[in-house]
Length: 354
Image (cartoon, rainbow, N blue to C red; front, side, top):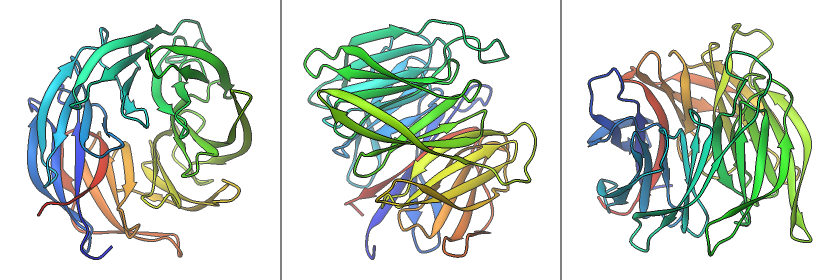
């Protein structure tokens, strides 16, 4: 890793916080495993951020749609434009692997929105809007659609959309010219499991879905045959220890920079779990599940060298830092907590500038 320099982008809710700065850019000290504040970006309720696959642009959810930023050489952000999603604030944003389209998942209104990306990285027009319908199990949150994640398969053929209200993940074929979607498959999770986020392995052959209410990660094989996707479940592994706090819900799902590890987090239990990925079989082995010293870890992520971990604790308004020993299954608190009101998402980015 040597001389590689990184920044970290941390997004946060601004409702009830009187703050207008919803994104904070930090310089990352890889040796010490700490962040130093670099700049703050004025944006309302940045509930999720993503970086384009060409690493040139950052896209953020905002109250008004999706905002685009040019990533400067030093990792700073320069606003480009904002595109409306014609609906309530989204909770998740991603791009396809050619950076032609943005996908926004809407938890509150159960709406999936596809927008075109212009050549300059700006947000273009809406190409597709799908309102989810239906009634799930009649419970506090599981009675109507809540779209929580939308992510492309690594071959860039299909968009997988998790609906934690209806306990399934819809799979759409993307028309790369029109930006339209066609439903071709449904991955059904257990009732009241609430699929929240999903990730694909480095080679794209395995799919990981974290389930909020069941506190587990399901592992699927993925392949395409005769222009159709096929998913087969091969593992279900808990995000918790056998001894855990009641009322826990799983939240984060992040791959390490080298794709060898997978992280998740548990609210209620206020813990982080790290798994080792078997690259050949896709199966997970839990290395640890330990406290994060904060309330409601909305996101957790390993540093790019896998030697440290940061937890974004929404309810306590803190970032907590840990030194990791993955071979021994240890997390050791690393320095004092940092105050950040209602943090929810973190992304590391390698920078070229000083």
